[in-house]
Amino acid sequence: MKILITGICGFVGASLARYLREAFEADVYGIDNLSRPGSELNRDALRSEGFTIFSGDIRMTADLDTLPRPDWVIDAAADPSVLSGLHSGSRHLMDNNLVGTLNLLEFCKGHGSGLILLSTSRVYSIRQMADLPLREENGAFHLSSSQPLPAGVSESGIAEDFSTDPPLSLYGVSKRASELLALEYREAFGFPVWINRCGVIGGAGQFGKADQGIFAFWVHSWFEKRPLKYIGFGGQGYQVRDCLHPQDLARLVEKQIRAGLDRARPPLVNAAGGAANAVSLRQLSELCANRFGPHEVASEKNERPFDIPWCVLDSTLAEKHWNWKPEIDIPAIVAEIGDFAEKHPEWIQVAAGKA
Image (cartoon, rainbow, N blue to C red):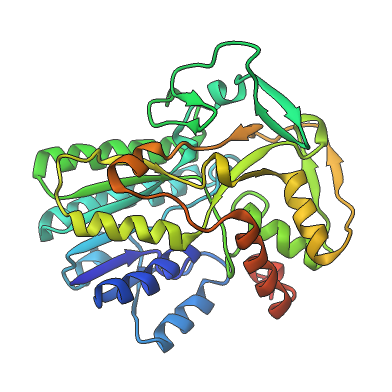
């Protein structure tokens, strides 16, 4: 079996590459344009482990045409920040996330390859997520029973039938459009397509930033005693996200590859940490303080564009149809990042491209 991973030198792409080569004893190779700071470190490490890495860009069909035919393509190459394209580079964002997906779909159609598209929780409506009734308890926002909840949301989180009406952010709409394209190609041309809507992903070695990879960013910043700030929603750090380890995502991807073209399963599912694996920034700070000691966190009451106070995905559909649920909990994820931070001081500078 041959598996092509786009964005293979990113945190998720590299994690999937290592897992899937072992799971399938497959020829796993990838393409990356090395646009993310630090990605050259993953490229060098992967090459030393025997992976073939092609330098190229999925926005360029000529770069894809040079690649060997794969049995499966895993698209992990998207620009991952909800703030992408907001102040500049909106065309770049759409080219990378949407045109890149279109090029991969044409590539898969031509080769008869299956596609696994990694999507995002940010395809869900910002306005409707922001309007969810919430209460504060133990330093975190929780859903409130003060009023009826809209369709697609429960104590288990936001399900796949929650609203995807705009506004979504430019990033969110690029991923939602990519989902729709992929589903249409699946129906029109009959090759396997699986779509995983991921929440926050976190683990050791991630190039975390304030707007993406927040768990890694927070733990490394705490360890390195760099400035941190609770932004928006009263500036108390009550906003909540769930977190998924890439090894848990890889287990789902393995199941999807083994299934091939299976019309009995839904082509799109949430793949996230869920309610059992969700914490607020304040609670994450407590975990960091327990590991590294105290550190001051500043406060800013004003929200940034597209900020939401609570986003936890319900992965019940994936559990039902794929017999899958996360196994690595948040304390283990934070401990893993903490161990890595101690071995790699100043990692924030690497992630920022300043090392």
